[in-house]
Image (tube, rainbow, N blue to C red; front, side):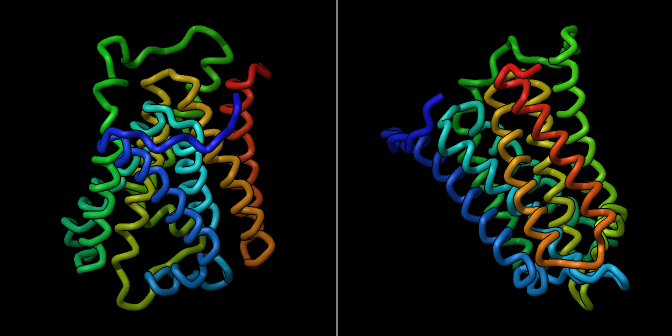
Length: 262
């Protein structure tokens, strides 16, 4: 597979889909590089004894960057649909938080992020009806290697469900807490859950190697982000190492299957 910069499409809808991938890439890179600054501004804080936990945003940003990069470089409708679905479910997670009395995530910035996520979702889903045919549906694979990929995608979506419906638990595991008066961070955790549900869910349903390639690429770049976090942040090595090993396993499964290693 030759990697070249794809030409800009002529159709406005296709241009919007490509733009959604590019913006996903840029947003992810910003979060990966400026994790501490963005995290502190948004309201994330480290729990006592878990110094440096705000660096957990680096692998999250790297995951977004990898997903956007895969969409842009490979220029495949199914990857754009994957990105659009991820942003749509991220918007749902943020809306869920904004509607929750316990989250107290209302506010101008959350509303603006909701609009941005909805716009990126709509742009990425331009190709939905070209990709989503009547043949696509949930089916348990019989081949062992395909079954391993199926389980890995289900685990990705399952982790996303934990983020979306148990944001407090996920923040506790990561060593994160809510800064004083900044309950809006819960909406972002739920939105992250939506991204993972979307990426894993589309991989499950589509059964398309390009989805595996995109998700594997996102996890591979997330490994780089987590290594950066290990270098620059301290105080939570056990969680970091476990998360690193899980991410490596996921990337190896998706990319290994796509490139025929198992």
